[in-house]
Length: 303
Figure 1 (cartoon, one colour):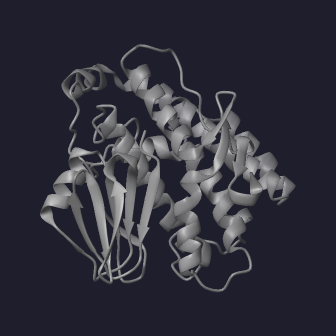
Figure 2 (cartoon, rainbow, N blue to C red):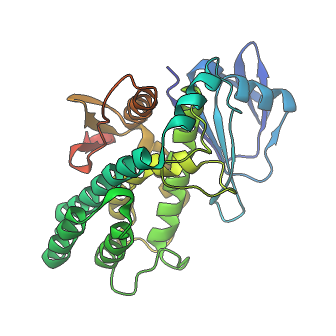
């Protein structure tokens, strides 16, 4: 199982040799087995990479995230549905009706709101907001047609920060942290979906014809509050979004969480989570265990 998340910030050259990624820095080669790598984050505009390397990354289902001049993720390179049974899985995805996906979306949104209110509890924030979030969770209907998700998000983010908080405001430090972390987790889930033969364009709720990762964005929803909790603690009291913050957010995949009664790395939890969804779609199981923010154990000295 691939486990390494490789973050590259220096002006280097990337190539492959003997099934290894070769990182050439100042004339010195660093060899990393391709089988060990799950995702590469490139945060330097001067990095050079060979076409052969790109082909090797896709053949080994290694996702690559590219960052722009503001150090924020701007692109994602992944394998193009290279799975031996992709067509079989696709048939299962296509035969599910709207009602099936609406009920699944209801489950996802309930868990997302429950995780959000748990974040507010853990951070000991406004009790009235927590009670309001509980009401929203209890009001979610099939397909979330009453849009409890949006109502809950407004209360949640206003409480998490303040009444002027907006997820679209680039001047708020937490937004930069959340955008960065979400993009990394999104890329990782995309890689896993491809690995299990899932077509990422066929979403549960997200249906945009311009989004190749509709399914990824659906599966990401219950995970977002766990990211929120860590990013909030990491950036609380900070003035700028620094390289050390970006490195720690990438390392979030190596934090630990309790899932299915087992302690594991978040990257491994995400794999089990996606595998459960694939099995559910293929009618090999009847439900999914969603990640719970209360089971987040942290990383490094926090574990």
